[in-house]
Image (cartoon, rainbow, N blue to C red; front, side, top):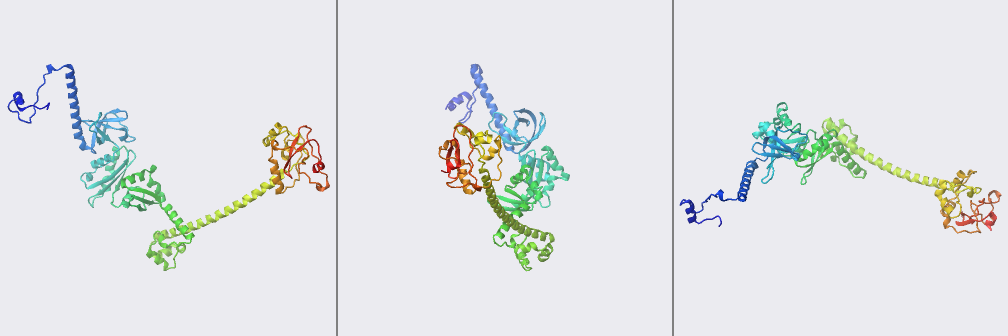
Length: 525
């Protein structure tokens, strides 16, 4: 209502020509406006002009998205490049710049329009040098057959600055799509490579058959076989020779990655040798388990081929592997190369079976050897332990200076507890001032060894002194028992130290204490 006038008022102001629905523009006298009102009017005017310009740019370039345009490098802003397209400034973001390209101010550049923003503070038009559309437009410029749609670009993928793949097909049977794009001596494609600063381009012939298209997309590698493993998930397996495997995968997987994007299928590349080994191992395992492997399981052997082989008494894998290439070529009426391939496959299966069988036998033999070796080592350790368990009773333990090994065995604890350490004989023989060599010591029995081990584990702080019992070191003599060779039992030489000496009776596994000099007969009583 504030912008509406009655028809009578409008006719009084503008005349009788005014009719209902017309618009009237009433002049506002500038003399009556203040400073603030004039400034506000100025800002509104400028804002309206900017909005009109942006709307015009948007309408002009929104329909040109994907088109190839030329411009000049105007300036650099925080890694982005401002490109002057003539009527408007565009921005080339850092993420849309190709790696390895260096530009200077004022240089001419070809870009493709990637996006047009309706509302933005900076440039509205974004351009790109990494988009696959740039590759399409450059081919349309250089190849007339593409421009007039005789040759059609089906798909294009890029890793900007490194490699690109483009799939083309022809609408006319007489026109070679790949040859048309390459040009005479590569003149057409070389012009595009120079524009992209040395980026490698693979031109692929498109096919509506996914397996054929995938084999072409992995160029320059040569593909032996393509097998579709899952149609719903769009997965396929490509088989190549061993020498073509690295070429098919490409540097850091680049070739297979671009081929996957170009075809739209997940591609798994395997070598022919790896596949044969896997199949041979599976068949060899089946043969080892008693299952019969049909001849038709071998690549190149059909049901008719198996029937022809059976007529010549070749009914299993072993017979097929034993047959010569000339015989197979004659029996099946095939070339020598085909016969050699069949024979090699059969021999691989048999070899895999035999190898697996030999590995199983070796594993069993190693397990048996390991068990016998452990038993022998255990016996040897027991004998060594038995030898080191006995000691010479003539050695006085109290006169021996402790060594590091003795301290590790508990000497320090024994001294602090008020009793000298009863060291083992091998240590005493090495550390004594007047060492006594241990010679002609017979191994003790397993029962005695167990008792000695049990007694030696006791520590002085756990022993209970018993003044009525003493130890001879070699074992206390029972009542009425006579020492070997008719000799009297030797007396134990003890230190002059007044402190009691703790030892171990290995026969009855009891702790004993030596207090003064007592002979073996007292011990027996």
